[in-house]
Length: 143
Image 1 (cartoon, one colour):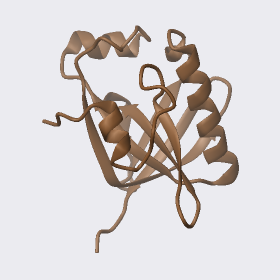
Image 2 (cartoon, rainbow, N blue to C red):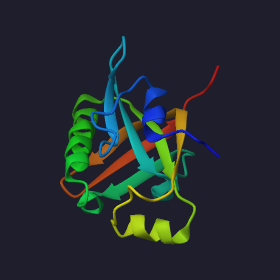
Image 3 (spheres, rainbow, N blue to C red):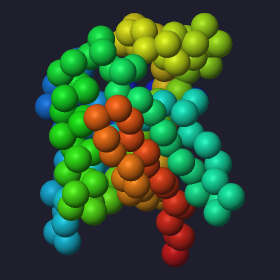
Image 4 (spheres, rainbow, N blue to C red):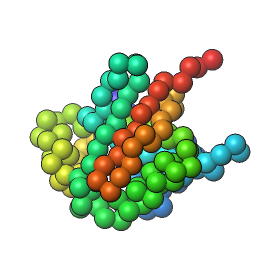
């Protein structure tokens, strides 16, 4: 089990959160091009027939974190319009009551969670609207 804080997890990508209290995304300037780093809930990933993983969620779940939602939307919009790659930090909660609270859009800042850096997962935003977003991730070949 990971003992990383969310800030530590972002640092694994050389990313710095604008405000660690509410931000869940960042943009990192790389020599070739920028990358968007996002923290997403494990429970919303679905395995695709192609072998990749799809993350689909709705912005209404973010109503308790307006600042974080606004910044996250800006970062996803940039990833979508500029075809920027998306890097992943996976947030996990084990308690079924916590998982239900997240599904219902309840505040998650006090929930006990772990953060897993998935450096070999590369994503791209395949759908982005006022209501929802979809990011497809593939596992990069190490080698």
